[in-house]
Image (cartoon, rainbow, N blue to C red; front, side, top):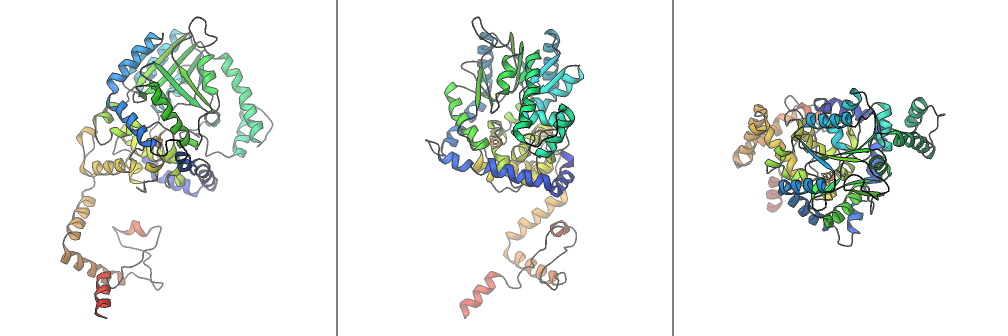
Length: 477
Ligand code: SF4
């Protein structure tokens, strides 16, 4: 399983905000990938309303997962593949190690896959003595750098070309250059050799199709196609929610996926993989395995408040518009999933209490919902997570939260429902704040427990007269 560092959210976020290079990179990725999304949806022949249709397709699939997974497994087996259901990360890794042992695998090439990041597959394969090479350019860069991805579809977004130039010079032994085409050519040359020598190819699965028994992979580099056809064994990993009923559903979802991810009309390569090579096929592996992973998803499915999150197709559109991600970057989230999707999925996978900073840190601005190609209501779930944290929930092993905070909100709720009490408190606060107001008319420091509010900003004092008082005076005049 991936290392969980969600507790360090605040300190990592502070570091990220001070990192000027990172700030430039984040602004750039949001500018390049995030800005065109709404326009791309508007330009769809069916209009942006297609997102609602996509939501319906995904929701139907989530509500019928048991039948769809059974049908998918049956059809993959009929196509000659093998299907394994893994309850958790450890089981999925063990199954993959066993397959590798059976096929005497020594070298592995991988396509980008978030679920394999989630289960910590690379570390396990490497510990078992295998050489594992990531083949997506961004993943390859961060693998060489010994880092983790900072964005779902652009994993090395935090790196400048100068940093990549130095890294390639050191690790690939080429002369230093910061020219992107030359760097890409160097990676391409190094990776070609890995593809040709690999015993096993590993991929994720963007979406599987139950009725045909195919998995699909989407990329812009063509690397996954090589990783899944050249080696003699292909192992595909998928989260158990990544299935839809019909092939025609893919058309809608992939058109939206490309628009959400990068405002593209269509991704460069979409591959349908239906099993091992059949007689007469020009290429393909001798053996094909599909490992379907639960790892906490059944618990999400069982909770009506959060089931909708399983509709996610991991396009990263929500990261590209999120004001919080745009400042703190992916590493602050302390788990492979970052941004708004990470702020909901990670607590549900690793523990609501353990990852509470992630959903408490979001602004609830709603940009993620507007950008999501499957119209997932992330702000609603962020609020639902906050409610669980305060109320506690045994199903999620979450004890009731901070009693002081809860009492404060109960008192606030009481006050705003009682006019005289509210007016009295307002008057008292207006008097008390006079002692704190500086000459420039602002409050620079509030006392505890409100001090956090003024740690990084000033506060304007309450007006001496309320709007209602002004209104009454104006009417008299
Ligand atoms: S929540 Fe929506 S926008 Fe975010 S990654 Fe998932 S599908 Fe994409």
